Length: 95
Length: 320
Image (cartoon, rainbow over all chains, first blue to last red; front, side):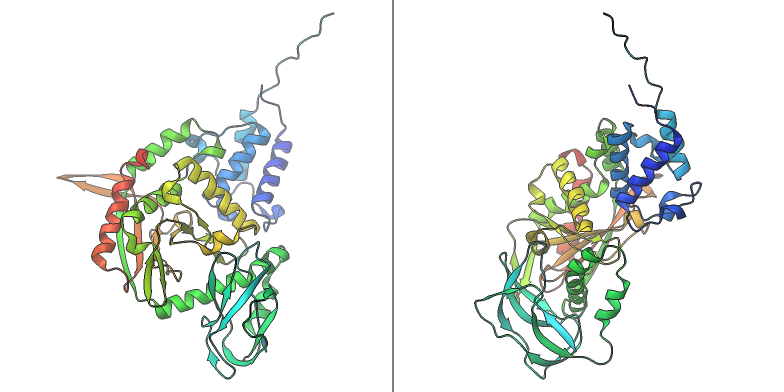
């Protein structure tokens, strides 16, 4: 079961990861609709770290085949929103 | 007046022994000239000056005593404002990190000037087909979580290491007018720091490690380099270096050899090129590999064979 996160929670999480990887970045200046790697110095190792953090904290394992979809901050958030599903109904305790 | 201090040659280095001065008061020195020989726990290191000028005063004589890092060893009279102050002004957020690394970065900058002056470089380049490696990586990474995935640079490091074992004249140190080949291969990786500057930390025994272990160590090393937590041996032991600017989008890069090493491999981005085979051609991913090598130790023919060996290894990535 993947936990449900709101778009805002996802956004905050991704911004925190970016801040950990690139502490010199002013998060407020990131334009959500533009190519992320143009605005922030992220090499392939930084990108892999970002994916690792997303996997460990948000539970989403992004395959290599989907990398091309993660162009802007907006794209990443939309992708993660779609991948996090509603929680299954909780088991009812009997007795 | 510029203060020449006992440098930090590694994250854990607290002190060093001043073994020998190579200059005396009154000598004119240029950026990159060696001033002294210092003994650390790992090895003897020739320390360069980052500042040009005239040696004004030697404050400490060589002895068996451990001198703490940061102790002023000599004074250099300079013309006008020292560049050191200007460099310090640019330090923004991570002050403690930049201060810790400043002497090391200055040392590297000085080494580059010396490299350019003293090492007779020759340069070779070749285009290497990367289809097999890319396909193999895709397959491997499909079933792996992000933390364990292999990046192309790891394959490059492994291929260079295995080839270096067969071509010892590219793997070792040129010291005191002679070349000492190294029995082990410790690849130095050129890492750019977020606030500017380069470090060239190494991974030990790169030829002997399985590729997944090499990947973990590479990512860990790069992270620790950027955080400022490197070990002394990682800074001083590289036997050959590798620079990769694929992420930055250039097709090729020719590196400068980091003395006392004798070679550096450069790789650009993986890009599509037309591969001609018999009478047909088709687009395939390729990478341009370059070799900058010390002509006192090797020549173009051996360099070409070395690059060929690297190419051959990248055509059988599953064997890396």
